[in-house]
Image (cartoon, rainbow, N blue to C red; front, side, top):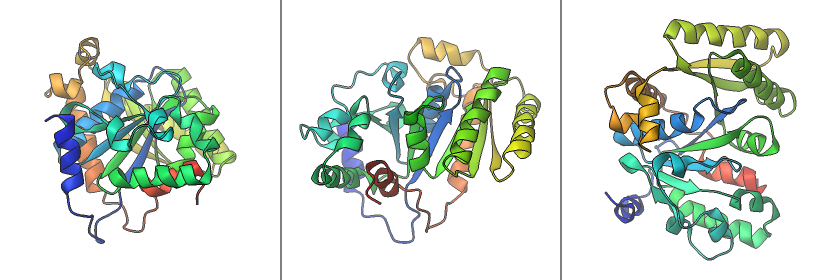
Length: 288
């Protein structure tokens, strides 16, 4: 299915019934670079799409935006062109494998803070053309505790912290959680361990993080989301600019992405949840 047909399919669907939960915005973030965050975002998007979910990926890593590189795509336009009024939002969306859509952000994200009121309203109108017709938006943030990473984590209502069994990854994940909780009053985090040899190792990593958090950040909640096992097929897929779920659907990592996607779909967030697309962009644009 090409990009035009996917977009048309989204646009042609009837308006979302009032009994349907609003689109979810899930921020996938990390305290340390190199933990496989973009691989997790894209493979999870693929697995969700194959299960009938309408998924939009926001590539919000401004320093190393590489969703397109990972997938071998070359977007002609990005968010900057929308903010200039040169393109509509649907003009810049790029289709990924499995039918999920990618919103290339590039430097356009930094321009959001300096928009005039009329420009902000225009952009919100553009977002509504797509936002009401997707089920989940996955936000691929940068790593660390810089302003950009914090910016997106505060706007989203669901946050998944990715870390690996490496001690430095655990330390940096704690640093990010500490900044978001102590300076910005964020209380709930979901933890996903990548490249674990087994679930036993993954749970051990989670327990270490929980012990430190309970001791020094007693008011927060850490929820174990799961783990992605170390899988030799994953680097093979990366070298071919393909997704492991697409190229090796029976691989251990692919099966776990399928499990995680089923888990997310089954959660059925509250109808009153404010973690939706419109709320997310209102927060970024300071329109709330």
